[in-house]
Length: 350
Image 1: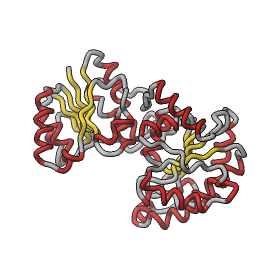
Image 2: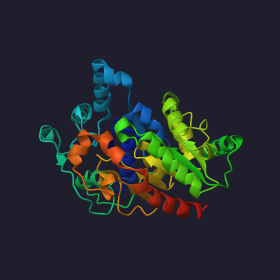
Image 3: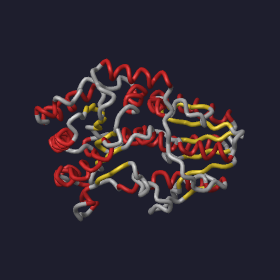
Image 4: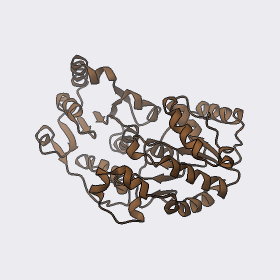
């Protein structure tokens, strides 16, 4: 038996969907389980023992109809028995349909429902105290007789990757015996990024609370000016605790460095999901226009998430239209008390 799971685009989505493979492997231990993902997301699922094969959706395929056609031929030649389209856009619908699999599962959309054997409607409230992102993915397995399981996404690092990360940190004069906090200073877009001055204020709170804190920023080279801007807003004593030039030069290196951190703190996004998959505690700041329940479950005892709606009542549709204005209402003093409590809990465990 062959099963194809399709999840394109964002790293966090690809990582979250990967949890389905553990459940599929338990149900079909002898099956080949293939995962179609965008090529840039491969590092977060590399070494996953439940995935038999990766099929990469490359930039060339995105830009070329001929390349897409060749991919469709490759998919058809695999002769899949089951396809599970988690992504639910035109490209993934085409891939699933042209696979000619007897069982084709996807989320229900009225204009594509006829192309799938099992169009599944999403639930709007959690039934198992998990995030909606996780619970709705498990709904896609119900046609296969697989019920909800308490499984979380996992990232699989090698011993060598962990050793190299420890060596990099110690060479950078970082004390592995003192708290290390990875700071997700930037969201995936400006409307998902906590205001720079507010973030700096929270970093000041971290350092004033935890005198031995060592702060690493999560950013990529072309975001250096933005990371620098947040650094510049910090108090001089806070700057002494920030190692701005210590960051992962690749996604796998970032993952290995994060695995050595006490916690990851900052904007909601892929970095938060990756830290959770490494079993690292997280403190998440959600954009005011996002639905917190989509990505945060009620059972996440090792994690904290804050949202403007926790403190103020407002019209979410207006927040979607004016996200920056609502971010400015999300002042650091709303967050700092919970952050300090989180820090004390996690540093006492170090």
